[in-house]
Image (cartoon, rainbow, N blue to C red; front, side, top):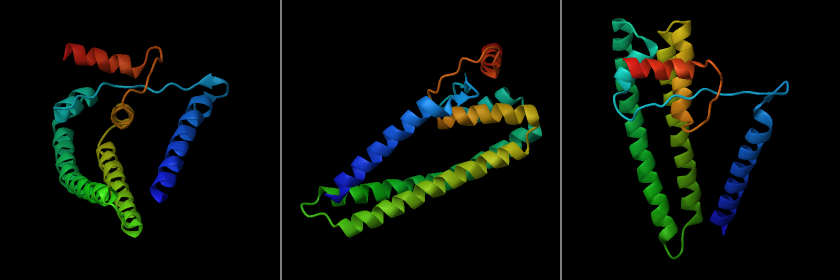
Length: 170
């Protein structure tokens, strides 16, 4: 019963968040704020960043080192998350689930999610620290696209168009 209440509350908060973003967050002085979006490839991120941000060789080496460190740490957390999810589902599948254990696993999963988000923002800030202002703006758009895939953009003369053009000709 506790899990059902939790899921209902989670669904309601998700719907509330979506409604809020649709009706309120896009309004700024009566005009809609449009966020640029970039198609980020599943593979070859090093080359993608190098091309999109026009990185110097030194910046590219730094980005590669940041990425390796991030992936080593993030993969460890992701594996732990999967183990906790499996434990959670195993407990849910039991005839008499232990709600205390489910609560503990839920908290542990939440902590691992938080750790993954911390690793992500630290990775972003490391990359941002070696970029010039123009590169930082492009990096933000790329990261936003990675974090919010499918978000629409229709800003005229946008950096998105410039980035897409650059992809076509490089």
